[in-house]
Image (cartoon, each protein chain N blue to C red):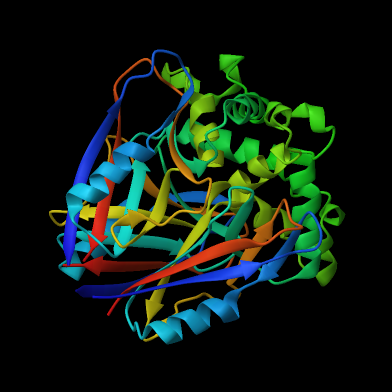
Length: 139
Length: 139
Length: 139
Protein backbone atom coordinates (compact mmCIF):
# COMPACT_ATOMS: atom_id res chain seq x y z
CA UNK A 1 0.00 0.00 0.00
CA UNK A 2 1.25 3.47 -0.90
CA UNK A 3 0.46 6.58 1.10
CA UNK A 4 0.97 10.25 0.27
CA UNK A 5 0.49 13.48 2.21
CA UNK A 6 0.60 17.12 1.19
CA UNK A 7 -0.62 20.41 2.62
CA UNK A 8 -2.05 23.11 0.37
CA UNK A 9 -1.98 26.72 1.59
CA UNK A 10 -4.45 29.53 1.06
CA UNK A 11 -4.61 33.16 2.08
CA UNK A 12 -7.81 34.76 0.84
CA UNK A 13 -7.92 38.53 1.22
CA UNK A 14 -11.65 38.70 2.01
CA UNK A 15 -13.65 37.07 4.79
CA UNK A 16 -15.31 34.56 2.49
CA UNK A 17 -14.57 32.99 -0.88
CA UNK A 18 -14.42 29.78 -2.92
CA UNK A 19 -11.31 28.47 -4.71
CA UNK A 20 -11.27 25.61 -7.22
CA UNK A 21 -8.49 23.32 -5.98
CA UNK A 22 -9.08 20.43 -8.41
CA UNK A 23 -5.81 20.99 -10.32
CA UNK A 24 -3.75 20.90 -7.11
CA UNK A 25 -5.45 17.68 -5.99
CA UNK A 26 -4.87 16.13 -9.42
CA UNK A 27 -1.20 17.08 -9.11
CA UNK A 28 -1.06 15.37 -5.69
CA UNK A 29 -2.58 12.19 -7.10
CA UNK A 30 -0.05 12.22 -9.92
CA UNK A 31 2.85 12.68 -7.47
CA UNK A 32 1.52 9.88 -5.25
CA UNK A 33 1.80 7.25 -7.96
CA UNK A 34 -1.47 5.74 -6.71
CA UNK A 35 -3.57 4.16 -9.46
CA UNK A 36 -6.41 2.66 -7.36
CA UNK A 37 -7.31 4.08 -3.97
CA UNK A 38 -8.98 6.84 -1.97
CA UNK A 39 -8.15 10.54 -1.85
CA UNK A 40 -9.08 12.45 1.31
CA UNK A 41 -9.13 16.25 1.03
CA UNK A 42 -10.00 18.12 4.24
CA UNK A 43 -9.84 21.62 5.67
CA UNK A 44 -7.35 21.70 8.57
CA UNK A 45 -9.21 24.69 10.01
CA UNK A 46 -12.66 24.64 11.57
CA UNK A 47 -13.94 27.81 9.86
CA UNK A 48 -13.35 26.48 6.35
CA UNK A 49 -14.77 23.72 4.13
CA UNK A 50 -13.73 21.42 1.35
CA UNK A 51 -16.66 20.45 -0.87
CA UNK A 52 -17.50 19.27 -4.39
CA UNK A 53 -19.87 21.16 -6.64
CA UNK A 54 -20.04 23.23 -9.83
CA UNK A 55 -17.46 25.84 -10.95
CA UNK A 56 -20.14 28.41 -11.84
CA UNK A 57 -19.83 31.96 -10.43
CA UNK A 58 -23.60 32.50 -10.12
CA UNK A 59 -23.89 29.37 -7.97
CA UNK A 60 -21.10 30.61 -5.72
CA UNK A 61 -23.01 33.87 -5.22
CA UNK A 62 -26.08 31.76 -4.36
CA UNK A 63 -24.06 29.83 -1.76
CA UNK A 64 -22.73 33.09 -0.29
CA UNK A 65 -26.22 34.62 0.07
CA UNK A 66 -27.81 31.41 1.35
CA UNK A 67 -25.16 30.74 3.99
CA UNK A 68 -25.52 34.34 5.19
CA UNK A 69 -29.27 33.72 5.54
CA UNK A 70 -28.74 30.46 7.45
CA UNK A 71 -25.98 31.81 9.74
CA UNK A 72 -25.53 35.61 9.44
CA UNK A 73 -22.15 37.10 10.28
CA UNK A 74 -23.77 40.02 12.11
CA UNK A 75 -24.68 41.00 14.69
CA UNK A 76 -21.48 39.56 16.17
CA UNK A 77 -23.31 39.33 19.50
CA UNK A 78 -25.60 36.70 17.98
CA UNK A 79 -23.01 34.01 18.79
CA UNK A 80 -21.84 33.02 22.24
CA UNK A 81 -18.61 31.83 20.64
CA UNK A 82 -17.82 35.49 19.94
CA UNK A 83 -17.75 36.20 23.69
CA UNK A 84 -14.26 34.63 23.52
CA UNK A 85 -13.12 37.69 21.56
CA UNK A 86 -13.60 36.04 18.15
CA UNK A 87 -15.94 37.38 15.46
CA UNK A 88 -16.16 34.12 13.49
CA UNK A 89 -19.01 32.30 15.21
CA UNK A 90 -20.95 32.27 11.93
CA UNK A 91 -18.01 30.65 10.12
CA UNK A 92 -18.14 27.57 12.37
CA UNK A 93 -21.81 27.11 11.43
CA UNK A 94 -21.42 27.77 7.71
CA UNK A 95 -18.64 25.21 7.58
CA UNK A 96 -20.96 22.49 8.94
CA UNK A 97 -23.45 23.09 6.11
CA UNK A 98 -20.75 22.87 3.42
CA UNK A 99 -18.71 20.12 5.09
CA UNK A 100 -15.13 19.57 6.29
CA UNK A 101 -13.90 17.01 3.78
CA UNK A 102 -14.43 15.02 0.62
CA UNK A 103 -13.33 11.49 -0.17
CA UNK A 104 -12.76 10.87 -3.87
CA UNK A 105 -12.04 7.58 -5.62
CA UNK A 106 -8.79 7.25 -7.57
CA UNK A 107 -9.22 5.02 -10.63
CA UNK A 108 -6.47 4.37 -13.19
CA UNK A 109 -4.49 7.19 -11.61
CA UNK A 110 -7.19 9.87 -12.05
CA UNK A 111 -9.85 11.45 -9.84
CA UNK A 112 -12.96 9.38 -10.60
CA UNK A 113 -15.44 12.18 -11.21
CA UNK A 114 -18.81 12.74 -12.82
CA UNK A 115 -19.06 15.35 -15.58
CA UNK A 116 -19.24 18.52 -13.45
CA UNK A 117 -17.57 17.58 -10.18
CA UNK A 118 -14.90 20.05 -9.03
CA UNK A 119 -13.28 20.34 -5.58
CA UNK A 120 -13.49 23.68 -3.78
CA UNK A 121 -11.90 25.25 -0.76
CA UNK A 122 -14.56 27.29 1.01
CA UNK A 123 -13.25 30.09 3.20
CA UNK A 124 -15.54 31.61 5.85
CA UNK A 125 -12.97 33.47 7.98
CA UNK A 126 -10.19 34.59 5.68
CA UNK A 127 -7.47 37.20 5.78
CA UNK A 128 -4.85 34.78 7.07
CA UNK A 129 -2.94 31.69 5.94
CA UNK A 130 -4.93 28.46 6.21
CA UNK A 131 -4.28 24.90 5.12
CA UNK A 132 -5.91 21.92 3.40
CA UNK A 133 -4.67 18.35 3.82
CA UNK A 134 -4.51 15.88 0.94
CA UNK A 135 -3.97 12.28 2.02
CA UNK A 136 -3.95 9.44 -0.52
CA UNK A 137 -3.78 5.71 0.10
CA UNK A 138 -3.88 2.89 -2.41
CA UNK A 139 -1.70 1.05 -4.91
CA UNK B 1 -4.92 -4.56 -1.49
CA UNK B 2 -8.04 -5.18 -3.55
CA UNK B 3 -9.98 -2.43 -5.27
CA UNK B 4 -13.41 -2.48 -6.90
CA UNK B 5 -15.42 0.05 -8.89
CA UNK B 6 -19.01 0.10 -10.11
CA UNK B 7 -21.47 2.71 -11.32
CA UNK B 8 -25.14 2.52 -10.37
CA UNK B 9 -27.69 4.27 -12.63
CA UNK B 10 -30.90 6.05 -11.74
CA UNK B 11 -33.60 7.79 -13.73
CA UNK B 12 -36.27 9.17 -11.40
CA UNK B 13 -39.38 10.43 -13.17
CA UNK B 14 -40.01 13.35 -10.79
CA UNK B 15 -37.79 16.26 -9.84
CA UNK B 16 -37.06 14.90 -6.37
CA UNK B 17 -37.04 11.52 -4.66
CA UNK B 18 -35.18 9.11 -2.39
CA UNK B 19 -34.15 5.56 -3.33
CA UNK B 20 -32.81 2.94 -0.91
CA UNK B 21 -29.64 1.63 -2.59
CA UNK B 22 -28.40 -0.54 0.27
CA UNK B 23 -29.03 -3.84 -1.57
CA UNK B 24 -27.01 -2.66 -4.60
CA UNK B 25 -24.09 -1.56 -2.40
CA UNK B 26 -24.20 -4.89 -0.55
CA UNK B 27 -24.05 -6.64 -3.91
CA UNK B 28 -21.00 -4.54 -4.86
CA UNK B 29 -19.25 -5.46 -1.62
CA UNK B 30 -19.97 -9.12 -2.23
CA UNK B 31 -18.61 -8.90 -5.80
CA UNK B 32 -15.47 -7.09 -4.58
CA UNK B 33 -14.38 -9.95 -2.35
CA UNK B 34 -13.25 -7.39 0.23
CA UNK B 35 -13.60 -8.57 3.83
CA UNK B 36 -12.01 -5.63 5.69
CA UNK B 37 -11.89 -2.15 4.15
CA UNK B 38 -13.73 1.03 3.26
CA UNK B 39 -16.70 1.50 0.92
CA UNK B 40 -17.11 4.93 -0.71
CA UNK B 41 -20.52 5.66 -2.24
CA UNK B 42 -20.88 9.06 -3.91
CA UNK B 43 -23.21 10.89 -6.25
CA UNK B 44 -21.40 11.61 -9.54
CA UNK B 45 -23.75 14.55 -10.12
CA UNK B 46 -23.78 17.81 -8.20
CA UNK B 47 -27.55 18.04 -7.84
CA UNK B 48 -27.89 14.70 -6.04
CA UNK B 49 -26.83 13.21 -2.71
CA UNK B 50 -25.87 9.92 -1.15
CA UNK B 51 -26.70 9.77 2.54
CA UNK B 52 -27.48 7.33 5.35
CA UNK B 53 -30.65 7.52 7.37
CA UNK B 54 -33.92 5.69 8.06
CA UNK B 55 -36.10 3.93 5.46
CA UNK B 56 -39.32 5.48 6.76
CA UNK B 57 -41.67 7.22 4.31
CA UNK B 58 -42.84 9.86 6.78
CA UNK B 59 -39.24 10.92 7.39
CA UNK B 60 -38.67 11.23 3.65
CA UNK B 61 -41.69 13.57 3.43
CA UNK B 62 -40.17 15.55 6.31
CA UNK B 63 -36.86 15.85 4.41
CA UNK B 64 -38.70 16.95 1.27
CA UNK B 65 -40.65 19.70 3.05
CA UNK B 66 -37.65 20.86 5.13
CA UNK B 67 -35.28 21.10 2.17
CA UNK B 68 -37.92 23.09 0.29
CA UNK B 69 -38.09 25.49 3.24
CA UNK B 70 -34.29 25.83 3.40
CA UNK B 71 -33.79 26.21 -0.37
CA UNK B 72 -37.09 26.63 -2.27
CA UNK B 73 -37.24 25.57 -5.91
CA UNK B 74 -39.29 28.64 -6.83
CA UNK B 75 -39.16 31.40 -7.78
CA UNK B 76 -36.54 30.23 -10.28
CA UNK B 77 -35.25 33.83 -10.33
CA UNK B 78 -34.17 33.42 -6.71
CA UNK B 79 -30.92 31.81 -7.85
CA UNK B 80 -28.22 33.49 -9.93
CA UNK B 81 -27.21 30.02 -11.11
CA UNK B 82 -30.49 29.89 -13.02
CA UNK B 83 -29.39 32.86 -15.16
CA UNK B 84 -27.31 30.24 -17.02
CA UNK B 85 -30.61 28.80 -18.34
CA UNK B 86 -30.84 26.11 -15.65
CA UNK B 87 -33.74 25.81 -13.20
CA UNK B 88 -31.87 23.67 -10.66
CA UNK B 89 -30.15 26.27 -8.46
CA UNK B 90 -32.05 24.95 -5.44
CA UNK B 91 -30.83 21.41 -6.11
CA UNK B 92 -27.16 22.45 -5.69
CA UNK B 93 -28.02 23.85 -2.24
CA UNK B 94 -30.19 20.94 -1.11
CA UNK B 95 -27.41 18.53 -2.03
CA UNK B 96 -24.98 20.33 0.31
CA UNK B 97 -27.33 19.83 3.28
CA UNK B 98 -27.76 16.11 2.58
CA UNK B 99 -24.16 15.47 1.46
CA UNK B 100 -22.35 14.07 -1.59
CA UNK B 101 -21.01 10.81 -0.22
CA UNK B 102 -20.84 8.26 2.54
CA UNK B 103 -17.91 6.14 3.66
CA UNK B 104 -18.93 2.84 5.23
CA UNK B 105 -16.73 0.27 6.97
CA UNK B 106 -16.60 -3.24 5.55
CA UNK B 107 -16.16 -5.84 8.30
CA UNK B 108 -16.14 -9.61 7.69
CA UNK B 109 -17.42 -8.92 4.17
CA UNK B 110 -20.52 -6.98 5.25
CA UNK B 111 -21.49 -3.31 5.54
CA UNK B 112 -20.76 -2.52 9.19
CA UNK B 113 -24.00 -0.80 10.11
CA UNK B 114 -25.98 0.17 13.18
CA UNK B 115 -29.54 -1.15 13.51
CA UNK B 116 -31.34 1.34 11.25
CA UNK B 117 -28.67 2.58 8.86
CA UNK B 118 -29.66 2.43 5.20
CA UNK B 119 -27.98 4.13 2.21
CA UNK B 120 -30.09 6.43 0.03
CA UNK B 121 -29.72 8.14 -3.29
CA UNK B 122 -31.27 11.60 -2.99
CA UNK B 123 -32.39 13.14 -6.27
CA UNK B 124 -33.03 16.89 -6.43
CA UNK B 125 -33.09 17.40 -10.23
CA UNK B 126 -34.47 14.25 -11.77
CA UNK B 127 -36.06 13.30 -15.07
CA UNK B 128 -32.79 12.11 -16.58
CA UNK B 129 -30.20 9.36 -16.13
CA UNK B 130 -27.75 9.98 -13.31
CA UNK B 131 -25.04 7.91 -11.70
CA UNK B 132 -23.62 6.87 -8.32
CA UNK B 133 -20.06 5.58 -7.89
CA UNK B 134 -19.21 2.70 -5.56
CA UNK B 135 -15.48 2.33 -4.86
CA UNK B 136 -14.19 -0.28 -2.42
CA UNK B 137 -10.64 -0.82 -1.17
CA UNK B 138 -9.40 -3.36 1.33
CA UNK B 139 -8.44 -6.98 1.67
CA UNK C 1 -2.78 -3.83 5.00
CA UNK C 2 -3.90 -3.64 8.63
CA UNK C 3 -7.50 -3.11 9.71
CA UNK C 4 -8.95 -2.28 13.10
CA UNK C 5 -12.50 -1.97 14.44
CA UNK C 6 -13.91 -0.72 17.71
CA UNK C 7 -17.25 0.49 19.00
CA UNK C 8 -17.51 3.38 21.44
CA UNK C 9 -20.61 3.64 23.67
CA UNK C 10 -22.48 6.68 24.90
CA UNK C 11 -25.48 7.24 27.10
CA UNK C 12 -26.21 10.93 27.44
CA UNK C 13 -28.82 11.77 30.10
CA UNK C 14 -30.37 14.68 28.15
CA UNK C 15 -31.96 14.77 24.72
CA UNK C 16 -29.06 16.63 23.13
CA UNK C 17 -25.36 17.11 23.85
CA UNK C 18 -21.83 17.10 22.44
CA UNK C 19 -18.96 14.91 23.68
CA UNK C 20 -15.31 15.30 22.69
CA UNK C 21 -14.23 11.79 21.63
CA UNK C 22 -10.76 12.71 20.32
CA UNK C 23 -8.90 10.87 23.14
CA UNK C 24 -10.84 7.65 22.49
CA UNK C 25 -10.13 7.82 18.75
CA UNK C 26 -6.44 8.48 19.44
CA UNK C 27 -6.43 5.41 21.68
CA UNK C 28 -7.98 3.36 18.87
CA UNK C 29 -5.32 4.54 16.42
CA UNK C 30 -2.62 3.62 18.90
CA UNK C 31 -4.11 0.14 19.42
CA UNK C 32 -4.41 -0.39 15.66
CA UNK C 33 -0.68 -0.04 15.06
CA UNK C 34 -1.46 1.84 11.83
CA UNK C 35 1.13 4.51 10.96
CA UNK C 36 -0.22 5.66 7.57
CA UNK C 37 -3.87 5.26 6.65
CA UNK C 38 -7.45 6.46 7.03
CA UNK C 39 -9.59 6.59 10.17
CA UNK C 40 -13.37 6.44 9.74
CA UNK C 41 -15.46 7.51 12.72
CA UNK C 42 -19.23 7.29 12.25
CA UNK C 43 -22.40 7.35 14.30
CA UNK C 44 -24.11 3.94 14.15
CA UNK C 45 -27.44 5.61 14.90
CA UNK C 46 -29.37 7.88 12.57
CA UNK C 47 -30.28 10.51 15.18
CA UNK C 48 -26.65 11.26 16.08
CA UNK C 49 -23.62 12.81 14.39
CA UNK C 50 -19.86 12.60 14.39
CA UNK C 51 -18.24 15.88 13.36
CA UNK C 52 -15.04 17.88 13.74
CA UNK C 53 -15.00 21.38 15.15
CA UNK C 54 -13.85 23.45 18.13
CA UNK C 55 -13.99 22.36 21.79
CA UNK C 56 -15.48 25.67 22.95
CA UNK C 57 -18.63 25.65 25.13
CA UNK C 58 -20.04 28.88 23.68
CA UNK C 59 -19.86 27.42 20.18
CA UNK C 60 -21.69 24.31 21.33
CA UNK C 61 -24.48 26.53 22.69
CA UNK C 62 -24.55 28.28 19.29
CA UNK C 63 -24.93 24.92 17.53
CA UNK C 64 -27.71 23.90 19.92
CA UNK C 65 -29.70 27.10 19.34
CA UNK C 66 -29.08 27.16 15.59
CA UNK C 67 -30.10 23.51 15.05
CA UNK C 68 -33.27 24.16 17.03
CA UNK C 69 -34.04 27.09 14.72
CA UNK C 70 -33.39 24.99 11.60
CA UNK C 71 -35.30 21.91 12.80
CA UNK C 72 -37.28 22.57 16.02
CA UNK C 73 -38.07 19.64 18.29
CA UNK C 74 -41.60 20.93 18.93
CA UNK C 75 -44.37 20.80 18.04
CA UNK C 76 -43.92 17.04 17.73
CA UNK C 77 -46.73 17.08 15.16
CA UNK C 78 -44.50 19.08 12.83
CA UNK C 79 -42.88 15.85 11.60
CA UNK C 80 -44.68 13.05 9.76
CA UNK C 81 -41.99 10.70 11.09
CA UNK C 82 -43.50 11.21 14.54
CA UNK C 83 -46.78 9.64 13.37
CA UNK C 84 -44.90 6.33 13.83
CA UNK C 85 -45.00 6.99 17.59
CA UNK C 86 -41.51 8.52 17.72
CA UNK C 87 -40.79 12.05 18.92
CA UNK C 88 -37.37 12.33 17.26
CA UNK C 89 -38.21 13.59 13.77
CA UNK C 90 -36.15 16.72 14.41
CA UNK C 91 -33.11 14.61 15.38
CA UNK C 92 -33.01 12.96 11.91
CA UNK C 93 -32.83 16.43 10.33
CA UNK C 94 -30.29 17.91 12.74
CA UNK C 95 -28.01 14.95 12.14
CA UNK C 96 -27.95 15.70 8.38
CA UNK C 97 -26.70 19.25 9.03
CA UNK C 98 -23.91 18.08 11.35
CA UNK C 99 -23.06 14.91 9.40
CA UNK C 100 -22.83 11.17 10.06
CA UNK C 101 -19.10 10.59 9.85
CA UNK C 102 -15.61 11.98 9.56
CA UNK C 103 -12.61 10.52 7.77
CA UNK C 104 -9.28 11.54 9.28
CA UNK C 105 -5.78 10.91 7.94
CA UNK C 106 -3.36 8.90 10.06
CA UNK C 107 0.22 10.09 9.60
CA UNK C 108 3.18 8.71 11.56
CA UNK C 109 0.72 6.98 13.87
CA UNK C 110 -1.17 10.15 14.87
CA UNK C 111 -4.43 11.84 13.84
CA UNK C 112 -3.28 14.36 11.21
CA UNK C 113 -5.08 17.43 12.48
CA UNK C 114 -4.95 21.19 12.14
CA UNK C 115 -4.48 23.28 15.29
CA UNK C 116 -8.06 23.26 16.61
CA UNK C 117 -9.60 20.11 15.14
CA UNK C 118 -11.37 17.90 17.68
CA UNK C 119 -13.81 15.04 17.04
CA UNK C 120 -17.27 15.21 18.62
CA UNK C 121 -20.16 12.88 19.13
CA UNK C 122 -23.34 14.88 18.64
CA UNK C 123 -26.42 13.44 20.32
CA UNK C 124 -29.88 14.60 19.21
CA UNK C 125 -32.05 11.90 20.79
CA UNK C 126 -30.36 10.80 23.98
CA UNK C 127 -31.38 9.03 27.15
CA UNK C 128 -30.31 5.60 25.90
CA UNK C 129 -27.16 3.73 24.94
CA UNK C 130 -25.86 4.53 21.48
CA UNK C 131 -22.71 3.62 19.59
CA UNK C 132 -19.97 5.06 17.38
CA UNK C 133 -17.85 2.93 15.04
CA UNK C 134 -14.12 3.50 14.58
CA UNK C 135 -12.63 1.68 11.58
CA UNK C 136 -8.99 2.12 10.62
CA UNK C 137 -7.17 0.79 7.57
CA UNK C 138 -3.56 1.31 6.59
CA UNK C 139 -0.05 0.12 7.32
